[in-house]
Structure formats: structure tokens, C-alpha cells
Image 1 (cartoon, each protein chain N blue to C red):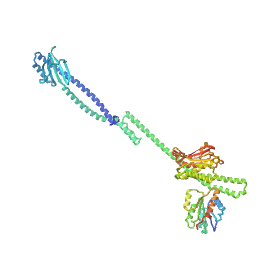
Image 2: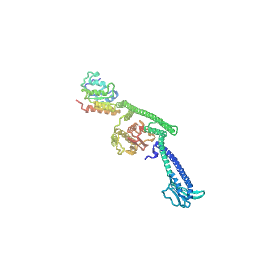
Image 3: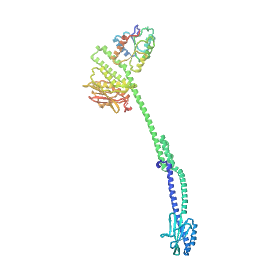
Image 4: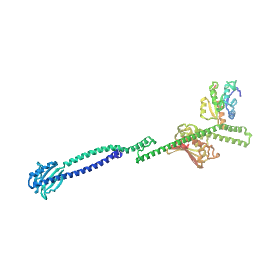
Length: 147
Length: 487
């Protein structure tokens, strides 16, 4: 469990392979320096609100962007999104849904719950790399986060 | 005025009976009448002649003794017969000797050419009776009688006949009215039953059999026919029900099979993507990080993994696409197909600026269809046309529409590799290809997708190909002759 004084990217992803590919892509552009990877929704919520496993964390330290997978055990991505948007402390954090699902209902629901962006993980390596590094660049460097 | 032919049976029967009895009555009465007329007339003449002879015989003395007063007295006896209107005695010279009655004028002389005997003239009987003394002719008796007796008698007879005929007619009417029921009731019964059956469509009705004659036989045949119809209708109905049931079952099975296949495709492709991503991703990472530590052959091996992974990725995407085509609801609008075709072609130019295919586009207009699905169809067909004509010296693709039998047939034609019509039935199958991977890249799902979309729009899709000369793909939408079985 990383206890960091600075969190830029919170990657919530249960698939270790996808996580490795994502982190690699961000690393290539030096965007993974302050990245935290959590493997399921429950851990993620604990982290964000300083509860459970992350009890005692300084929750004023919040990520600049959350990369959120949807299909996860225990607590899935939709629930995390909902809870993040429900809490005044976290509701302004940009959330990028990064998932395998291309299904309309999922897309609709994520936007309804307040996702900032919805990206379907490409199968092709180059495309995957490009997508992640571009989104990382955008949300961390180009986009102005809310104060 | 209703003709006899169209009159009700009851009336016909009554009329026939009355006519028959009428004719019989007429004949009988007439015969009797005539008989009476003739015999009575004969009798009357006979009577007169007898009377005349008696008078003539009695008058001989008067004539012999030339005593007109005696003759008048004798003639006066004719008073007893009221019908005698004139009588006269002529002497043998033919001169009037005596006459009766006293107040009339009789011919003074006997007509020269009179015939002895009795004749009827002008409704009087006139007779000349010779007065004979032995064989000596003394004179002639002229006697004239009227026919009133005969007339009265005939009138009486006429009256009686008329009364009899009238009463008989009446009786005949009453009798025939009742008796005709024997014949007409069964017929009417049969007619009523027939009408009831045809009006209500109730084939369980039966006509009542009244007798064992021809009508009875007709009734039997009629009932038998109804029975047969009833049986057949039941059979047809149960057959139809069976058929409906079977159709429902088949349709259900078909739908279930379709759904299963679609959900299978979806699950498979969806769940395959993550591990596939890993295979591709990690083989790429391997190459990136350890390329310099590998020999050429090692690199080749990894590259093989990569390209196959890529291929598999395409397959998975296509399969996913195929399953989605079946599931989605059609969003039918007035789709601008010209715009769709333009977009498809533009995209090809965008992704491949080395494209040297001559694409001729004819206007194809609007159609009621799901625009984005139409995009897929054209993307696939035009994409194929471009791909398979890429090796021709002067690749050419044509897009257009022809009208036939009220349907619009869209076509995409190319002059490329074409295909062998021998394998036509494989053309639209999933993952079926008619060319090798080395010749032309592809997964074999594109046409299956196009076929599925066209079917969902109640259209037909077909193709003609000549090896190395090119191929033309045709399709219709909202086809009037669409047969649900073709789905």
C-alpha cells in the first residue's frame, strides 16, 4: 500500500496485465511518477475516503485523475464512480473510464453518473499505448484541474 | 309479375292441381252438356213430329169433307202444346185451308219447294207433315214450334254445371292447398336447411327426412354431403392448428437459436479481448525491451505472435460487430444513401492516400432504413470492392441503383479478382472466405454482417462473380417479395 504525499494518477484496475500495459504507456511519457494502482473498487474507495485499509491517510491528498475500470469484483467501477461523485470532497476529480466494454448501456450509464471521459481499451498494442499516453498527457498536463 | 317458373312450389302445386281438375271438369261438363243438347233436341223434334202426325191424321176427315171449321177445331187442340207458334193445313192444291192460332198470318200458299220433314231454322222447328188418307195425299200440315223448351233446359243444365264447377274448383283449391303440403313440406324443409347452413356456416345441421321417395334420397345425399363437409372442416381446422403450433415452435426455435448465437458471439468476443490484449501487448513489450538480446529467429517468432494476435484481434472485433448487428433495434429514418456512400469513400481516402481506384458513384437517393447500419453495409461492400480490385491494372469500382419490378436494387461493382460462382453458397457465411489470406486480407465476417443487416431490413443480397474479371454485389431493402424464410 503506497502512502504518498502526492498522487497524480489513481489507477483502479483488477487485471494485472492491463495495469502493466497502462503503467508502461504512462511511464513512456513520464506521467507515472505519482501513480497509485489499486486492484478493486473497495480498496479504491477506502483509499479516497481514508477508510478501511487506508484508514489514517491524509485525504486532502487527492489524485489529479482517476483511471477507472468497470468490471471489477466486490465493488465495480460504476459504484466507485457513483460514490466519488456523491461526496463533495471527491466529486470534482476527473474520472476517465477505461474499460473493455463498448456497450451503449454502459457508456450511457457512466456519463449519467458523471464520468468525464469513456475510453474503450484497444486490443492492439500501439493503439492502446497511444490512447493511454494521450489521455494521460491531456488530463495531467493540458487539462486544468479544478481547484 | 312473377313467372310460373319462379313462383313458389306451393303455388305451383296448387295451380297444377286446379288446372288439372279444371280441365277434367270442363271436359266432363262439356261432354254431358253436348250430349244433353243433342238428345233433347232430337227428342223435341221427335215429339213435334209425333204431334204433327196425330193432328194430320185427325185432319183427313176435315179435308175430305171440306170443312175448314173442323180443321180449325182440330188445330185448336195444339193449344195444349205451348211451344207451337204456328200451324197450318194446306189442301192438296197447296192452298191454305185452316190455320192456328187465330190471330196470326200464315203463308196463303204452301211454298212450292217444301220438303216433308222437320228442319230447324232460325231457332224454330219447322215441319211439313203430309196428310194422308191411306196412301192418298189430302194435303200438308205445316207446323212451327219454338225452341224455348230446349233453351230453358239447356240454361238449367248450364246453371247446374256452373255451380258444380265453381264448388268443385273451391273444393279442389282447399284440397290441393292441404295436400300439396305432402310434397312441398319436405322440399321447403330441405331448402330451409340449405339456407340455414349457408347463412350461418353451421355444417352440423341436418335436413329432416320425411319419406323414402326421391326427396328422401335427396335429403339423404344432402345430409351426407353436410356430414362430409363437417368432417373435412374439422380435419382442416385441426391440421391448421397443428401447423400453427409447428410454425410457432419453429419460429421460437429459430429465434432462440439466433439469440444463442448472437449472445455466444458477444460473450466470446468480449471475453477474448482482455487476454488478447495481454498477448499482443506483452509480445510487443518483449520485443521492445529485449530486441537487442534476441537473434533474428527469436525476433521472427515474436513477430509471428504479434501478427497472429493482431489477426485475432480483427476477428474478435468482426465477430463482436456481427453479434451486435443482430441485436440492435433498427432506428429507421429517411436515410440519405448518397451521403453515406460519400462518407464511406471519404474515409477510405483518409486512411489510404495512395488509393488509386477509380470510384464512380451514381446517385442512389433516400431509403427508409437505419442509417448507421447502412453505413456498415456500404463500408463493407465498397471496402471489399476496393480491396479486391486493388491488384487490377486499372481498378474500377461502380456504385449505383437499378429499378426492377418496383424494387430498387443497389449495386457495387468492381473489376478485380472476382470469385468462383461454384462456391457461391459460402459467400455470405460467417468466417467463410473464397480467397486465401496471402492474396487478400480479411476475416470472412464482413459479408455475413452485410447479409444480416440487409435481412433485418427485409431485403435480399446476392452477387455475381467471374474469376479475375470482377464481381458485382446487389442488394434490396424493404423488398416487396421478401420471404421471411430467407432470414
